[in-house]
Amino acid sequence: MVSGKMFLWGFVAVLCFFSALLSGVAARMGPPILDGDIWRSPEHIFDTSNYGRLQLNNGLGRTPQMGWNSWNFFACNISETVIKDTADSLISTGLAALGYVYVNIDDCWSAPSRDMKGNLVADPRTFPSGIKALADYIHEKGLKLGIYSDAGAFTCQVRPGSLFHEQNDAELFASWGVDYIKYDNCFNLGIKPEERYPPMRDALNATGRAIFYSLCEWGVDEPALWAGKVGNSWRTTDDINDSWVSMTTIADLNDKWASYAGPGGWNDPDMLEVGNGGMTHQEYRAHFSIWALMKAPLLIGCDVRNMTTETLEILSNEEVIAVNQDPLGIQGRKVSVSGENGCEQVWAGPLSGGRLAVALWNRCSSVVSITARWETLGLHTSTSSSVRDLWKHEVIEENAVESFEARVDAHDCRVFVLAPEVSYSVA
Image 1 (tube, one colour):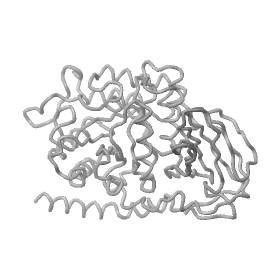
Image 2 (tube, rainbow, N blue to C red; image 1 turned 45 degrees about the vertical axis):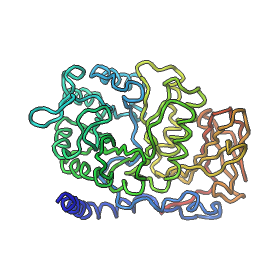
Image 3 (cartoon, rainbow, N blue to C red; image 1 turned 60 degrees about the vertical axis):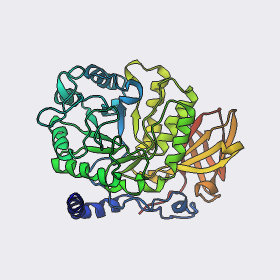
Image 4 (cartoon, helix red, strand yellow; image 1 turned 90 degrees about the horizontal axis):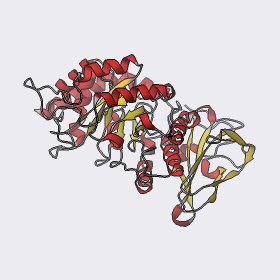
């Protein structure tokens, strides 16, 4: 019976979204088409052939989501006061104006059990005014409110989950004015995620409210292969922690799925740890740079009420943010490795206007010079290009040909935008 209903929902979804899909995919780029003689084969290097296999098409996530999430710093130590103060700080620091508009409450917001009517209720100790009042406060600031639930019997912190309560919970979230849901994977009763996640998609769509749907499946069943039909983003990895080893490992895991991401549906390597104290300034700069290049969600995970100047400087780099939010929407990826254990790395991705973002990432333990070669980037060696450093905010070369090189500190990352003399077009 359940499988029959899910089939019917899926069939209706196909009919409803098919025409939108065709126009959406047409509007979004396909593999780059060569124009002139500057490009060798960018369509091979920056493959997007797996994108667009029936995206959710709820109109959201045309660029990766930006905002803040409570978990990495606060875990369960949250309250409506913390959330309100965070919203105020996003505005006062200027971060909201840069695009960080989602204020996302993670686990532990709800009471330990549902009410007598079977509804989720906010924990009366920490959210005494309720979620509706909090959403109103957030909206008055021009921001958006995100909430958390689980595609299981319980959340990871053993609060009520939404499995088999999808319709009721989605209607409740919509009535509160929720704009975003992070949907976790704990206590899932052994049911495949391909079966557990679509019902919430259908329930959210049925509310008539535009709610960003973020799947947090941890990459267990390779969600890039199926989640584009279900949500606006999908976790490709296990949880990040505030360490160099975790961050680099997760970046490599997420890189595998680059060809599946694009406007409306993004690979999610988990939230930012920038500013939480477990990495150096250089490592945090690399973390932010690579997440931006990979078109990952930029969800701040630190206490924005008490940031250092260095943390704010990283999070507010408008030129790096622009790479992440570029409307072309092609995930950047690792294109070259060299040095001991492959610690000298070049990552790159196309941008709108025929430009190219290039990151030189030093994962070595000492300063190195890293070279980005045109053939590695898909450019003909005779192509001339300017090279702009996005962290120094200056053009370092006006007419680079064949390659460019830069010295990079240990565990640091430098990001550049190349603007070739003749751009290529996309279909």
